[in-house]
Length: 581
Ligand code: SAT
Ligand code: MN
Image 1 (cartoon, rainbow, N blue to C red):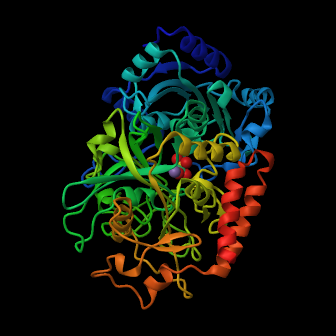
Image 2: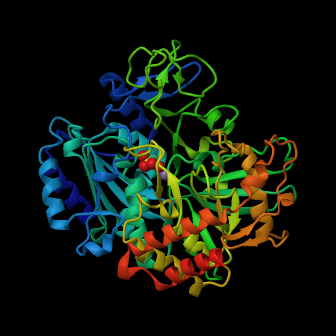
Image 3: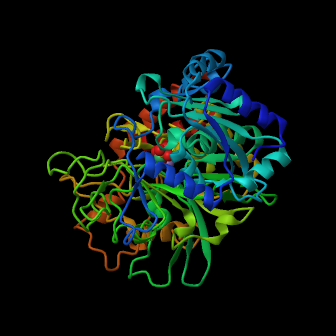
């Protein structure tokens, strides 16, 4: 296989010349090809076969112990003007960046195979889908990209028809963290990544293309590329509302997208459209519609069990790639809070010893086709996507943020998104549990200056009179003793129901300076064991604390200088003044 598209052929040839692979393989995405790659990795030890009776066609990959998460400090946005990348990104001058990284790519694929992966982000026949080609020397990346994207023959045919695609070059290099870089060149629609084989660093269709490069394209073309799950909530009357929810990595997007309604909520159904990324477009009627550019899930494993997320738990019992989990004596995958089995081996392959650290790495992942999800919505294949009723922001916050509240209008909603803060998680290297600003959950993923990004968000108000309502949720509030006030997981449906009632104008709310909060009686707490006063705490607004928070949001926004839209600053001032009066 090769290609009729000269620009693609020339690029692959030039990369082969630089990296000097033994062989070049064009991926067609077929089952036979996948089987050959799996056999090859079983032979080399890159994959281990798990118990094939209880976990048919499941494999374990152990990544290098120094390569287990995204590396934000080594991720760069390389634009001609540093202000276009903005204070939210690490920047390098494009020519210097190419020179630096090309020196590392020189000869990097000696003794290896260069794989060419044509892929499509979004339904293959969607006008909103975008194309890419990843070159990699990692067969693990190929088999993951096959699950995460529409990869192979059909994607190549569309690339050849359209002639444009995002160029992604990846090599695992020698895994030396000092020679690891993830570089983005939005002006050239290209990505270069070396020195890591893990997740978002290496599966270039995901964060690098579908968020960093796509957010840049989206601004130029008038749409939004967001770090959001997409979920359909069907009521007992059979009507479905679609919500897009932005939470930081490892804050429960996959669980919410696959939620199972509890027994107390008969007749409700949940449909999963996506668990991580949403591309949003206005249609001719001014309705905001969402597609999921991905075709699979790269989800956090620890904590997944029959109670927290039964859909996911069932889905990952076959045809799943596990990365960095432990194993049992029966060679089944094992992770913390799995609730069945005992670990025998940890994620590094050493005998498991209690007190010697977790069996599964906290950022261990499953890769699985979305079609295996029992709550998968066939509308995930709809070329035009689904109409959104609401946008929901959220973070992981022990205190301050109420369970749910609603913005008074779009502009306030943009401020709400810009002010999102969350405790850091194991999804990225660095300290865990420190609160940091993570606007729209896009801090690690926005491919351009946040100030311009907020202007772009604000501009939607001039383009449509019927934008979705905007909400903020927080499932992670704790009491003084560090216990969660809200049970979360399936019970979150009770909060989604309030959100939908608000969208339909069926329920009132209490106006506060930070937005509209539910009246306690409008949250269904039937059969729920909440500790005393829990709901009251969950729905309270501590004015003194919020004054501090809004002042801190103001200072944070000031950090964006002249490019910050005045409208956003005005909105922050309005809320702060309301809190002070
Ligand atoms: O490693 S990924 O970036 O794909 C996962 C995440 O952090 O959301
Ligand atoms: Mn994510």
